[in-house]
Length: 159
Image (cartoon, rainbow, N blue to C red; front, side):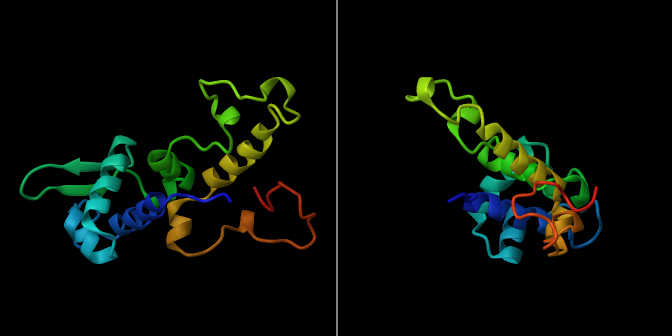
């Protein structure tokens, strides 16, 4: 099963919360405040914010009126960026990842190098969906189901 970590899910929740500041777009929000508003435990919010800050998705401000704020608007942050910030590079298998240790069956592998096609398709799809799309709870038109297209089609419905 292909599944994202809970931390990535929480990161999306935290980022969406940061997009709805209490006072103004430049206002900062604290980790405890975000935790209270979202129901995500404060230590988890702090951990997520640290990773998001390291990935330059949020910026932290120190001091008595310190906290966190988004560095870019939600429509400029791809879900792929959030996943990479929390879980690392998007890679389905170790051979796509370029693992340091060679695969045990590398010499005889029938699909060697072929996972790149699948990995690239997933990465591209995740790059096209932004946090703004997630905040609207809608599926972008390019990814809506079209029964006229073959089930295996990787071609988006619109560009």
